[in-house]
Structures are given as structure tokens and as C-alpha cells.
Image (cartoon, rainbow, N blue to C red; front, side, top):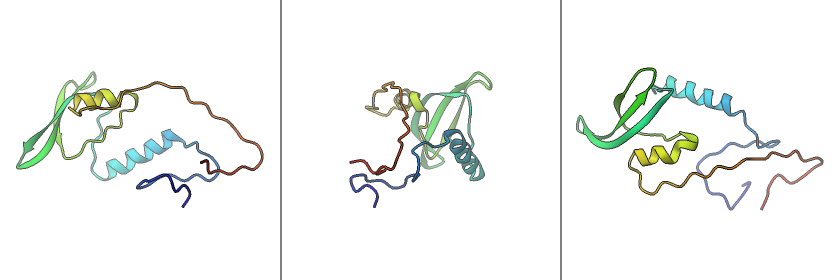
Length: 121
């Protein structure tokens, strides 16, 4: 038990640093997703989304637009809103009530010399 005040399902543990190669991590997530049948639509904006009956099942219908391939829609069982700074806008487009407001902030990273306790309380 590293931090008893944190409740979670899963996480990344890095004993020597809190910095992760986010680009390599996203590429690994993309590869895993595509190997499991996921279709990714890059450079595509979500215009709207709604729940609907699709072949007797409740599914999402996602409406999109892309400068490369035009507008299209598709049904899906799950939506993962991984749109970064646009997450609140996408949540609103999907009809999610009360998405959190986006706040922009600059992060700062520091190197610590000597030994220190990696657990902060």
C-alpha cells in the first residue's frame, strides 16, 4: 500500500520518476486497441452523440466531421472521451450534463537531489 488516501482501480508505478513517455504510451494503447478490433478515426471532431436503439440494443450513435474524409456517423457500445483539453466540449456534444470546466495551467517539473521519501502526504 503506497498511499492509503488514494482509491483507484489501476495505475502506473514509477519508483524513480513521475515522468512517463506519453507519446510511446499512447502508441502502445493505440496498438493494443487496434489489435482488439477498435477503429480509430484520427483528425476527426465529434459533432454530437446520442443513445439509440441499434439492432435491439442500446448503443451510441456518434456524429463526426473530418476535413480528410467528410462527415460520418457510426454506432458503438462504448465511448471513451480521451480528447484532452477538448474533453469538456466533447462531453457537452455527447449530451453529458455538467461536465467539468476546462482550466488551462502550466506544469513545472523539478529534479530533487539527494535521497527523499517518494510518498507525499
